[in-house]
Amino acid sequence: GAGVSQSPRYKVAKRGQDVALRCDPISGHVSLFWYQQALGQGPEFLTYFQNEAQLDKSGLPSDRFFAERPEGSVSTLKIQRTQQEDSAVYLCASSPHNSGANVLTFGAGSRLTVL
Amino acid sequence: DAKTTQPPSMDCAEGRAANLPCNHSTISGNEYVYWYRQIHSQGPQYIIHGLKNNETNEMASLIITEDRKSSTLILPHATLRDTAVYYCIVDRGSTLGRLYFGRGTQLTVWP
Image (cartoon, rainbow over all chains, first blue to last red; front, side, top):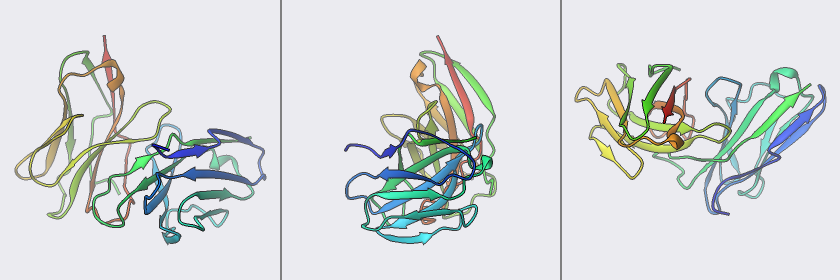
């Protein structure tokens, strides 16, 4: 597709449930990023992939968060045993560059609400 | 880490120029100034970036002061669709996408 596609757009989970959020980056984009955006805040970096390699996961808030990009294209962000503080919009972005200018194309996000 | 300071909100009349300021007094010589915006319920959208020189594209102009301690994003003819949160980000460009967005400036364009 022409842009970054994320699914589902909305997810409601009960506390303790596992969730998986999908990101389809722009075809051919080497770099893929996940960000978390709490209500009223700016996006915060979670993790970065270059092709299938996860080069930076320093922003993941706990070991309940796990991201993968096994074939270097589609990525999944998984959150285990969700907590209420995980409620946020999860944004995926991609870039054709593996270094240099930080010009990212973002998807519309997946809004997670944990009850 | 917050390297930029932006006003929390601004407004602008439709058709007029919107000038969004950003202070980045601790910017390093190899750091770029990036601007992104986020329209409600959408992901952030890249607008423009620059190092030293002023830059212009189809969306906006970026004016960076000579000492590089501040910059202004200019939307020459604001429309209602420009209502969004605008983020000014300072980054080396090699931080592999780890951008610090902060809270940005909520720009409201009114008819």
